[in-house]
Length: 365
Ligand SMILES: NC(=O)c1ccc[n+]([C@@H]2O[C@H](COP(=O)([O-])OP(=O)(O)OC[C@H]3O[C@@H](n4cnc5c(N)ncnc54)[C@H](OP(=O)(O)O)[C@@H]3O)[C@@H](O)[C@H]2O)c1
Image 1 (tube, helix red, strand yellow):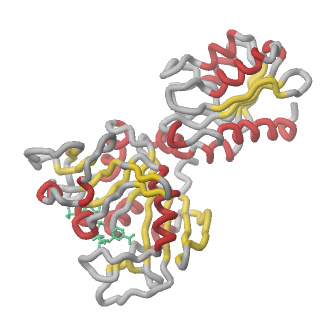
Image 2 (cartoon, protein in one colour; image 1 turned 60 degrees about the vertical axis):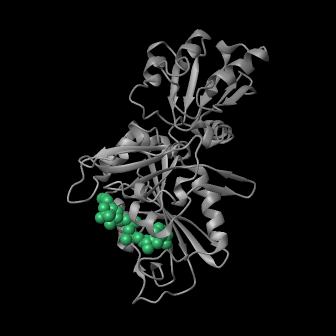
């Protein structure tokens, strides 16, 4: 079949994959699959709905069987290379071979080094067609960054005055963005990550809650705080220490710091600081490997934000720009916009009186 005839079916698998709620699928990829019979009719389709549940191929095959399709005369289209290893669920390649599906079309490879589904299928006589689609990689950019860089997908949020300051008065947390921007950040940023990363400095100045507040729901969110000496523990009434049932506070301390007693839900991640600063790549990799954090949002001041950008650890920047100026003699300047040079601006919209812009570094390519 020619590529121009195939792409609509592969694009359809991407549309199927998008039916899954990313918060339920993470850290797995979102995947869609469909089966066409020899009359080019869709006889089965599905998507991976939740981590631990069946993969998309399983749902498509089950539906095709219920429809009485002859699988040995069908073509399988799938947005991601079928898995060849047994993880939380059996390998999809075994299922494809068991049902003698003769032809498989795939829109993106799996960056997980454990997976070599295309090769395995080919070796077993399946006609494998790999037609890479950028939409299929974009769909799973979090998964790609996790697998390629062994760290969470990192988004950075910053609110700035129109003349580029993050707080109107040094040492205070004066709000910069409007109500609509804050709502937007809860809905589109905090709601879609596993944790927020910030510094003890910002927590002590701003005293934020750092949970998710949606129109009809308030949700806990884990927080990672870079706190070299565990100084937050001296302030038990910080709003961050609200009672938690399923989230945690991770304090990133220097390896040599001894932290005596930890309140409930607080854990310590000891790392060797260098010249007073935490090694950020090591921190990011520890959050992925030891804390299963696949996507995090940075809500810190400009010093930590600049370090992360300089170390190329930021995948997306979300800027909320107020139309109001701050007084330069009293205010704290934001990070340098030269640090956005390698990024693409991928969206912009008005949030109340503010301008929202999103910049993407495409580290998954
Ligand atoms: N407008 C906004 O969106 C927004 C958001 C958050 C905060 N803020 C404001 O930002 C201000 C604080 O900003 P800030 O730039 O001074 O502080 P920051 O970026 O929040 O934190 C910087 C501190 O983190 C620690 N740190 C440890 N390792 C680091 C590393 N590798 N790189 C960088 N920092 C590291 C250091 O603290 P130690 O030296 O103490 O170890 C450093 O001083 C506050 O006024 C707050 O209200 C604004």
